[in-house]
Image 1: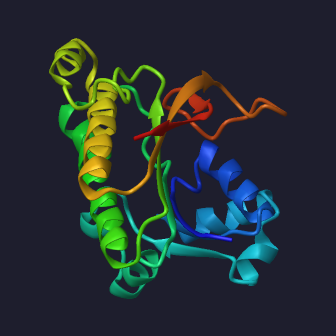
Image 2: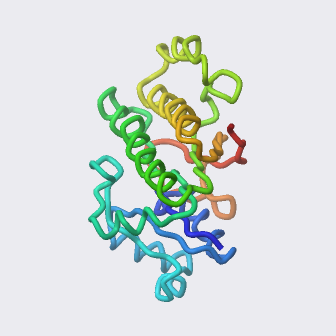
Length: 213
């Protein structure tokens, strides 16, 4: 059983990820912006018992804030995680340059700072990063990324910054030496059972992890 720190736990993908992690007997610390939304999701996903028993611990924060907006006690608790799953981020393909940079690239730096502290202190077992399927970076080219970076110039800020964050995470994982898996998400709109999705700024996604060196 692992202690997992999860971002995006109240989003489309994160909710289902959280449910499966609890079924596998992991304990999960979830970064949430709204305790009210968190309570609603727990009821909807039948996670109340896991929350009450302490197997799920919500910590209030904000991906766009310094140090993820965590209080000192919550930050110290997050640093006891064995695994980090970064699934958070806005679903708004119309984001401008500054907003997209803050939402993806700067957030990646905050997540990597957390991962580096965990790895230096106790050894991070795994960092899992969710990225769109269009990302041009892979195990073969991220060490010489200039041609791929040039290709990104033609993309809107939303995709460009998301993929630059992918590159940043890959490079940092190599520098710090912690295990990394990148999940390249294919496009699926709506829940597989009933078609509903809480996302309103675009489509949500699912796919399979790909191990990165």
